[in-house]
Image 1: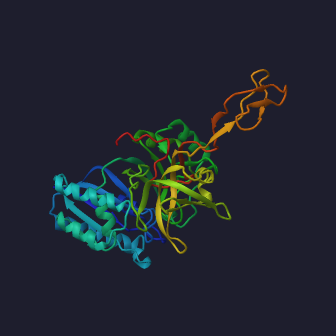
Image 2: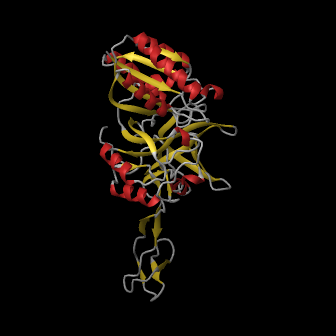
Image 3: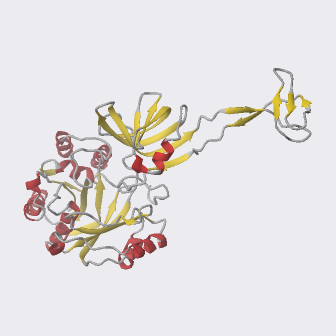
Length: 417
């Protein structure tokens, strides 16, 4: 029997993470004769959720097992509790793991329900009651608490997708400083396989983006659109710490899957607006006020995006992608991660004609009295020339400099839309 399994909320500041539990679960199931079908899926959810775990990701697996749904559910849940108690110590940090299992979702109705739930989960807030209601409607079994939401959402993810190859540290190294990556080898790999890799190097700061942090069991992760490129990266990137295993995930990272139009706090905002005015705050952050009374915050740290925001003015038409956050001053504010300048409200400037004799500039002699050359004094009748004002800002896409899991890099071409 084919089953689809989702897991979430297995990490903690002490150690462990949901992808590592996924790896250990795969090892355990293979020993039990359970077959893993296809790539495991690493599914990033709404980045604005205030109670999210680090990375806000769930993991989904498709498996083939010779046991009924209840037997499989108990087997997986026992391993989940064991991991959170003994590895991540998640219960000590109020983690609320969840597991959801459903029989083969190829039935069109089940898949539609799951896909709609996934779409909502990447840009909106979902209460646990709704997740349980949806799980029951497709006859899934669910165990746990808040992690049920991400577990169920992960089952609805199909495409578009990219890949991430994650390497895992030996457990005895978890409390030790993480190994250092050789930046030159990473940059060489990143340049060689461009544009099929992304989010691996911060070229502005000259730092690697692949290393995990804290007590996370992940050593490093490299991202791209082709599996063969990532496997080559694992060979070519030099790091002074051995890993004990690796796993390649199909993922929604870098796909803009969260680019949906919302209007409530903690939803995503994705819409066209007209600029009314901008305010540059002390320190360099920019607030864009729109004609329909939206307020868009562009942090100084976003780099080129912040620089572009400072050049906007009344009448410019832009498309904004960002998260809606609560604001004590404005009630809610949109934290921009991308702005596309669609139309500039350029002004037309009238200029006096140049002298037809010597091509020098001229001055007006008064209304309907013609012009006089500043250099040779020649008097002539001409119309003023109309020139469109030049702006420092260009039509185009401006994106936050720092890496965000779901946001698609400007250059990235997805091969599976």
